[in-house]
Image 1 (cartoon, rainbow, N blue to C red):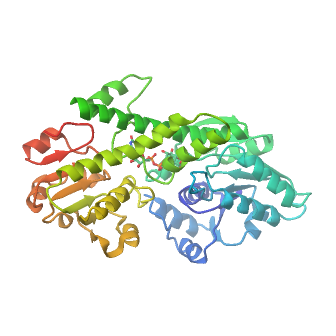
Image 2 (image 1 turned 90 degrees about the vertical axis):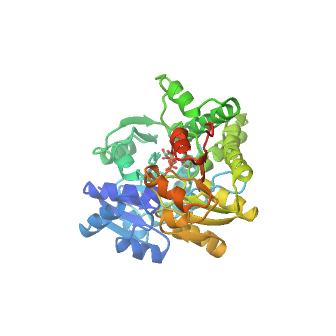
Image 3 (image 1 turned 120 degrees about the horizontal axis):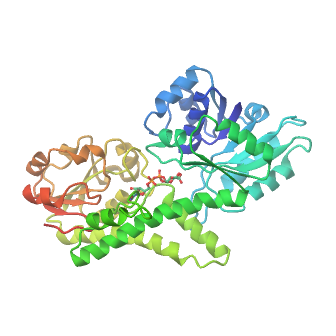
Length: 434
Ligand code: UGA
């Protein structure tokens, strides 16, 4: 098939590479010449494990084309995926301007009398009713004799495991009123595993928000339970392990920590609250999920302010989770901002995101390319992202290098017993400091 992705972020670029790898001809439309040039040379721009290799392989095979122009891709594609960003506005609503602009450009570029159906499928996360609006824009601006159908095909990939998730999704959701559109999308997804969910546009749109809201809820639940543990002396890991053994509940995605960050869960829960309000629904349940996500960070900063034995601190792990260089809504940024406000001096280390953080803080903090150098003579170490390399790091060496052996672990990487044996003063989430 010939297909197009508009947008080359995590969703657009990863999906484009995967479908090109299956043998399809894939166009990717961007809007910045510099980025398109980099992509054409095999530079994925974003960091995602395995992506660069797949990009280079499919560029070389001639199946993947990057362009700024809509003309050739739209004229030749059977399916056009809209995969542009829907960032949060100041009031929490999803900003849909890019989605609607793109829909109009598609409509205006569709050739007159194109015989075969063009499916316009939205992969961006959009509020219920958006695809209907896309349909209206298409009808208004496209040539009358050119058939189109709209479909919603939400994406469930996670950053850091995006290729694996795209190839092995739990489900492929397709919402459309057009049987032909559904058939074309089913054909495209044939090589991909996962249960097929065929539904209407509104349900497909809501499935995406409901899934992310459930994930955010599990995390905030775990974090709220960690507050109970801290007040009562219970151990949050033991509590959640036991709770999770109930098959109706499960333990996955219920890790307490510094809350959910990234470009999806924080924005989607806020957008869902706004959608609820606009529909006259009391969405205060989701507001609480969002509030807890802020409270966990405040609870942890209070621990640091209360117990840190000096003003020189190190932070390990800056991304919103391991396996990515993405720092959007990363908890680390909250801690950097707060600690700078309280006049702490900060050294930071991250395996891949240092350059992204440098762009934000420049000379305000010190950057290290090695975790050990980062902690020399500091009064305390704060861990905000659970990169694997911290899990079995040489803790004796860590202790020798630090001025004071204080660790504030926001991801419960180490066991309190081990840390006690090693004579660290160790603070974590929902567990006693021994
Ligand atoms: C999330 C969803 O997991 C994907 O299914 C979805 O497709 C994607 O959003 C999206 O809407 O595009 P992602 O943002 O890549 O994926 O990251 P997650 O793995 O969900 O992690 C989000 C945040 O939650 C991270 O900051 C992570 O540290 C935190 N988290 C996750 C916890 O604090 N505890 C957990 O148990 C799990």
